Image 1 (cartoon, helix red, strand yellow):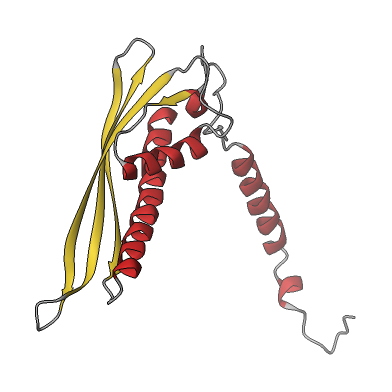
Image 2 (cartoon, rainbow, N blue to C red):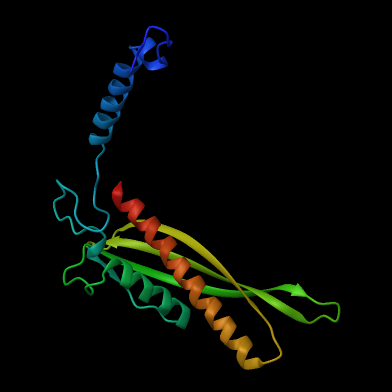
Length: 179
């Protein structure tokens, strides 16, 4: 309640602030409504074939770690299975290397970095290469007295690096397809 003895509140003293805030909110809502949202996995409006990322066939890979990367990509790109008539074919090759990270005074290695490097290319239906790139992921594992535990830790590090590598490849492909 306002009385002549009390000073007016700040908002009542500045009536121009309320319309400015309302105008700013309205402008923000208009700008937000103008944002274009496009599907990454499906088709874009106006595309002739428009299979998007779900229309990518992933070629088989030779080595074990490459197969793991391929499986992660299949799960991400085509969770309902390989497309019957793909728009693109993805081929990839994965190389694995291991480098000593922690070396003790008696020259024992107690930790390794495991690096996966992938080279991949995306070809259209006509066999033309439309995109080629490389990606890399690194994992690490400890060397312990038990050989079985060390081998298991190395395998887990390779699988985690393969998961990260597949996510990087997926991101690069999706960004390319958006263009």
